[in-house]
Amino acid sequence: MKQLIFCLVFLPITLIAQEYVDVFKFGYSYSDQAKFKDTNENTSINAFNAAVTLPIELSSKHVFLTGVDFSSHNLWLSPEYNQSTTIYNTIVKVGLATTFTEKWSTTLVLLPKIASDYKTISGDDFNFGIYAIAKLKKSEHFKFRFGLYASTELFGVFATPIIGAYYLSPHKRFEIDASLPITAAINYHFESVTVGFDYFAIGRSYNISQETSTPLYVDQRPIEASTYIQFGLAENSILLRTKVGFSSNTNEVYKQGDQLNYRVSAFSFGDNRTQLNPDILGSIFLKFEAIYRIHFKKNNATSKI
Image (tube, rainbow, N blue to C red; front, side, top):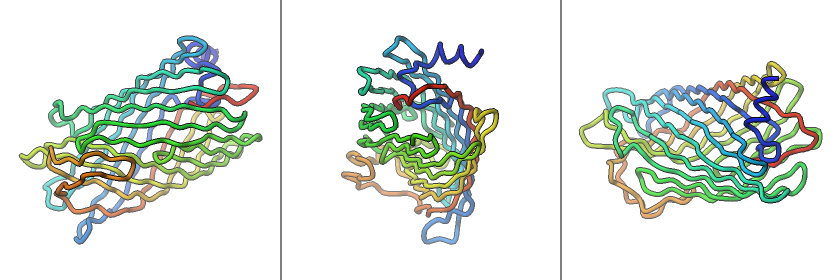
């Protein structure tokens, strides 16, 4: 009964991304001995993330999207520093999903965020992003999406076009969910076990103040690819994932105010910055995730937000 009430109040049948929503998601990853380029030094990397997502139905065609994402990374940014650095990112998600016809729908999300070492919160810690996507339902099993993600960052303006698709096979075992070049996932579902592959790549920046008297920032843009196995409990409402993957570990330090002109996807324009730390080379990571998911029983597939 509680799940039914949640469905009726929070989740519109015609607008939900898939036949479920991940209300809570937690993850922890660890990478050991990520080496600094041209040195004998290395660093471990500990990362934590948590996300809460709550869609709220406004009408039969409009859904208010809200939630919070939090993440942290602890690592040595340079072998010359006296201590490791922990950088944090908190994003508030505020948006609107709209269905225009049976085939066409859109999602617009505003993403204000605070990203720094949280030693001293200032205006330099605040940035703003936007995510805009249009979706075309081609069939009951295939949806096409295209749009844009853009944000202000300490290194300048970042923007990337998004082209992707969502496919769920008729027997609902094989699934592809891609929003390239940012994310992609391919998986196969058994009864209570899922195996898959995922990819994630996006640029962020963090204001840091603990290392030197000179204000600095971190230009973080890792590319992560992993395979995983997922176990479902309580009728697949609780999901436990174990991942093994590889990350490029890009965490470059620059003086605050040292900017490029702009960055489009992986391409930087007018980048004459002076990097203040050695490159951190790629490494293998282990990640554990726990998800609380609410499912919706439907007679046919729904459009993906």
